[in-house]
Length: 291
Image (tube, rainbow, N blue to C red):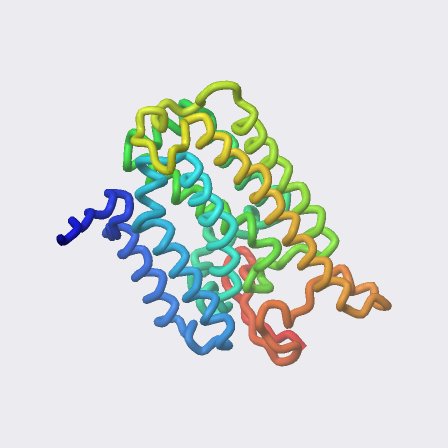
């Protein structure tokens, strides 16, 4: 007797979304065109990893579960988009790829303004907090174009948030190591607060998921609590864990010099001497040499 083959559940299907594929192709194409493949192998691998993470997060089962079934998976998706993808992207992108994007003077001016720690932290934390209010969250779930905008905002502000820690260009410098430590610690606070509020809510905050088909026998409230815990515990630990990485990088430097508070040029993937760089002076780009 032949047993019937069970069809996979709808959320298990590998759906590819054209907007995501186009975005991945654009990122990869610009990377190759502007000489990204000439970077060290570990950086190229990091960039490829970033594209893979983005593709797997916004296509297939993870995307299907987050969009139509489970709030907790949606929270996991947001954590990957904001805490995993941007560091891989920034570490894997050499200065030669970033500088063409900064050529328009208004882009450079905005980037110089936005990538300072206080502003970068606010630009990241404000949308993350506001978009978890039920009325905004529900609107994004019910209107797909708005959902795409939500993800783009999360990704863009997360890249800005990570910039003071992983900037690939000295023209938009990384924060000093002590500042990075404080910055990453403080960033964990709003993430922890939002996660705690979602976890400790007495009722279901997002009716969209109450009406969704149940997966893995999770009730809507249990699903919401799991999602809140992911943001509260995992998100906070991830950011605070990054502070330990910064600490070890800082402690490995020569503490006898007053320059220990700065970030060495080598951190940007460039040599300490004879490095060409470009700086916007307000009217035009000027090239110079670091020696």
